[in-house]
Image 1 (cartoon, helix red, strand yellow):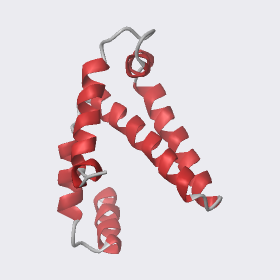
Image 2: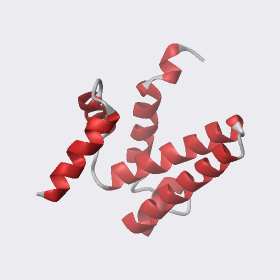
Image 3: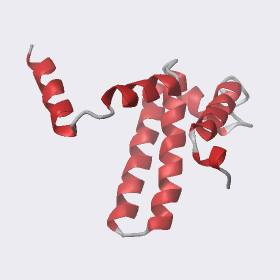
Length: 115
């Protein structure tokens, strides 16, 4: 695996495939099948994959955490595409938070919800 295969380039390539397959025949494409079920089902799939990742972590199985994390990221990217969001938007938000204390970030969110 080269450096490109461990970077956002993989996310960009997978996201491009997701966008290409969103309008395909649901009988021939898992992505198209997910899209045909709508946002709620896609969001439920994200939740399912998140739980499977947590279970693998609790079981202390690094290999399974990797496997389930990939499933989670894929489902999340399908959700992004369904909502017309782009990976770059998520990366920009991560970059905005970079260097900010997680505690400060959570406090800022709490302050916004109080207004």
